[in-house]
Image (tube, rainbow over all chains, first blue to last red; front, side, top):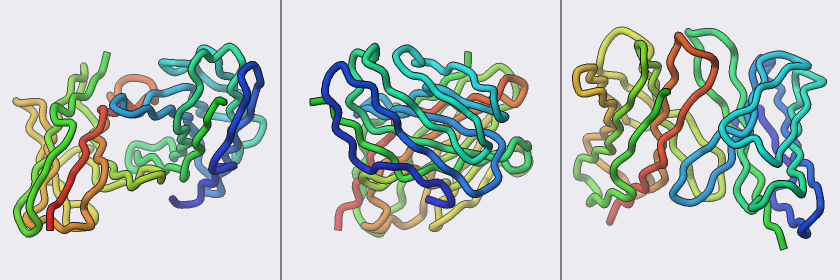
Length: 114
Length: 114
């Protein structure tokens, strides 16, 4: 899983609560991504960021928020507005250069809403 | 819009036999193509990529993939399957002319039978 850490590994949330998932990388990568993985649906992009203090919505950003105050960190907040948040969440990062276009993934956080 | 299709939810193969996991793509320009593998409750691990050059790409753990522009395919192959190859495999595409978004397929579960 490279130099990307995600915490916690498992997270339980009550309905109506916001919760923040941590993603940290020590690879000096420019871009960071958040994906949601559901069975049979593959990975869907929630948000991504190419530089500090800038981020873009992905395909399923509703009910989520992010920040990129430091290059190493890209936390994801799952808000109470997200109707079905139970899923496996993956963070990734990569260098923004065509010759090294590989994404490196963290180990994931499994979020369960009780 | 770019897209990736993995037509098989699951592929079963006997240990020692060759394996193929299929992937087709749709993108407006010349594609960047990737294969990743995921073991249970883990993040994705990079296997190989096609950026340009030789259509046959060799990657980690003895895997290779063939880029076929006319058929818009990028099938993953291995000459002799191992039980330890059993995992979930994802194909992904990025249009280098577009913004920095990578689109993943829905995944194919590979089961290697002893």
